[in-house]
Image (cartoon, rainbow, N blue to C red; front, side):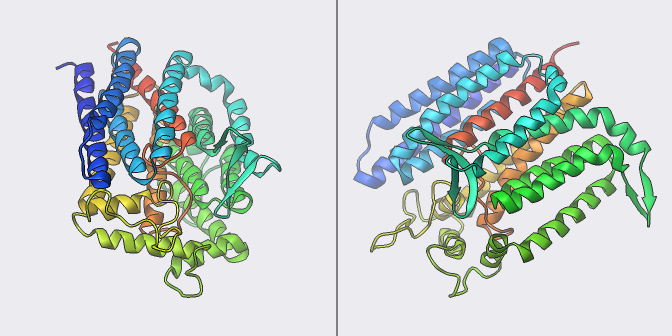
Length: 433
């Protein structure tokens, strides 16, 4: 079977999941089965087939598993959001269509994606500008203490950090492609530790500073960790020096420790994480309430879950029992209703996508393609780790979305752009010489 036929066959489970998921919601709500679920499944399959046909025409040698895995995640996300709020699910479906459109535009506009190297500094400046936008008066949008996006009155809320992550990875891939030999050859051992030359390590230090600024100014721990983790991943792939990564981790840990003990809002997040069941912190307006109830919801799910649609999201007198279930806490809802087995299936799907991304990086024929694909894959994987780790209390909880599953237009559109770039690299790497 050809690669493209395998891709087409892989879209069938996604459409079946939409059909079965909506059927389960209708049965849970009205104890009746409706043919509307079949209609939704057919529409979703039609959209995915349209994306497949476009890939077949433009990228015939691209990886055959990435797009079906994304379709599976997106279909599951729409069903879960519909179970929580049908209006939000319709909006998410609209963002999914827009994401597919931007996916196609990215492939057409950047068919020769290596031209992006010429504009690396412009891309970096635009990315840093996007990160600053949420702090501008009048348009800055604050949620749960963090400045995550900008609000266009009467239109939508946009999270520029989702696109900034792609721009910063492109800059790092281009810059380190040119300077990696200098970083390796110019390294010096000090007290038994190999350190890179500061002269050529300057832009990397700037990214470290950006991560710290994000912690202070935007109050966004998740984006800070995601950006800096992507930097270290690209740096390691470029130089193969583990000592550089260790030095970077130590620097980040020192900066995070200082900010966590001296900046009030960062310290509050850490306290909520360390003591979620503290009666003083357990309040609906504080993060401790959200973390603690998320732990309770996951524990209630057990191994096999309470059943689809059975998770309790509101308290009898009104108000949220599990705040932000469609965004920050959607993984807790999944674990509550589908149990550990269902949550593990979601994580395995993400791991399969990440594995295909790293395989594409290994097959790439030039350094820039390898570094860019490895960086994009690492950022994607770190985004999953940050939100799942926050919900499961491995790290402090942040407002990062679960890619393709959580409600959020900026996230799903930006991740479709990320997918387009990875498929462009894959097509060029797999194309016969």
